[in-house]
Image 1 (cartoon, helix red, strand yellow):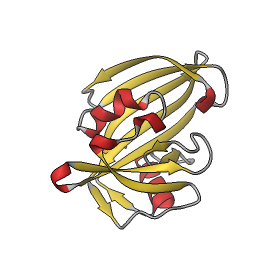
Image 2 (cartoon, helix red, strand yellow):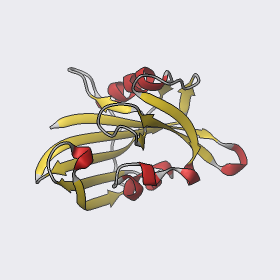
Image 3 (cartoon, one colour):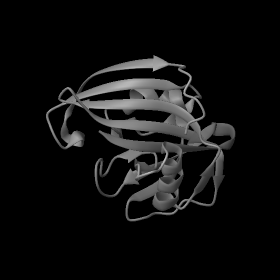
Image 4 (cartoon, one colour):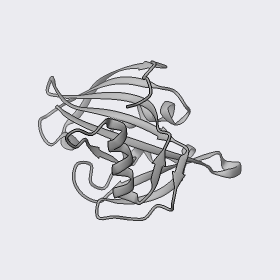
Length: 166
């Protein structure tokens, strides 16, 4: 099973509410879709360390004080495929810049482009952006690659204690 992270930096967007930093993936799994910065854990790395590193590498931002907001398990054809550790933070330093991997942009939370994201994101991301925690399982069928498989079912549990997020 692959272990990955997603990080959702948030900032005060003024009268329009909060903004969230999203990336448009330029290559790899989910190319052309929007998501938060993130990626695969490296050997010996904690999920939180991975989220910090991937955010720095993909968009040039330094993030701190990450709060674990979710733990998502993705099954492909009945087998565990990916476990994703989801974080959010308001402690952000720097301005986002594009990389070979990602084109970042601040988006009002109310305008997140769910129609250009993974099929399951609209089920859990709004709650995470509002401050809830979630544990979820998402089932896909149709074989590799995961981004071409069909989303068939899910289970969500809200407001689950997730610890300090390490």
